[in-house]
Amino acid sequence: MRDLYCIGEMVIDFIPGAEAGSYVRNAGGAPANVAVAASRQSLRSAMCCSLGDDDFGRFLLATLEENGVEAIKKTLCREAITTMAFVTLDEKGDRSFTFARKPGADMLLSEEDVRKEDIAESVIVHAGSCSLSASPEAEATEKALRLAAEHGRFVSFDLNYRDLMWNGDFDACAAAVRDVLPFVDALKLSEEEAALFCRDETIFDMMERFSIRVVVETLGERGARCFFGGESFDVPGRKAVCVDATGAGDAFWGGFLSALRIGGVEKSADLTRELLESALRYGNKCGWFCVQKKGAMSSLPTRAEVEALP
Image 1 (cartoon, rainbow, N blue to C red):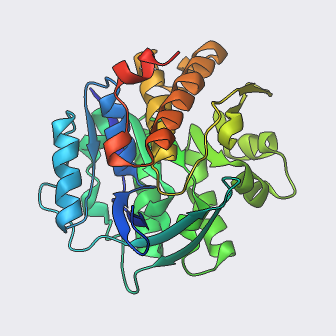
Image 2 (tube, one colour):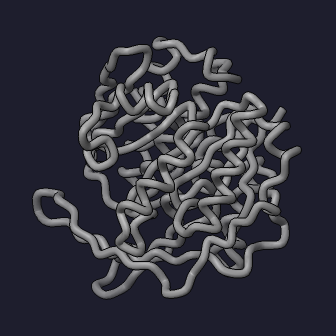
């Protein structure tokens, strides 16, 4: 069976280059990056259902294939969504950024992009919140994750509220997330996103309401917190200044899913605290590695590089 199947399309980020006023294109915040990260860390195979039809999309397709990833969409999507993330750091390492989307861009993810046989042949099915950016795409993603749940697949979802709030409508954003959560086994979110989406309930309340097996809350340089089996536990991180568009979140979650799969996860019932702690430590190393190199595609680590870290 295929280890990992990613639902979604690449996002393009522009981050500051070496010279003042120059910007560099990097991939970030997309299921395609999770597929690359996981495949570089020894999964047998991974697939991503759609890629943007431009120079960077073709570069990402080549990168996926070089790392053993079979891409479903050999003919690329007509247009990729474009994200502008201009990031600055002050002397304390604090970050600030402006965020905007290319006018009129669509994810162009349709039901035809997600084939039943691809889901049926997979073990882990992963989607990112960028797949929910507009209503037609949200419906396609919801149907894909519903199908994955019906087939008994392990479903992973990476929440990023900035990907969803391009139109400023938080209620619509939250509704789109709530629609897919009943099909999700493992949910990743940040501290800020937990505060936003849980609001008047605890994370455990949310897990019970949507039957989510495990929630991973990323805590920046403090590591990550895992909610599982009615308890929570922290796994310390490594001190690092995390800049948007480094791809650190993709590296973290790709490493986490890779460790789960290598540990033998095929369904949510296979989860244990010991396995989750191991996956969190591995994911933290992957994210830290990526942050240190301040880049996305070029810095997603291999399994050997991660395991060489003390």
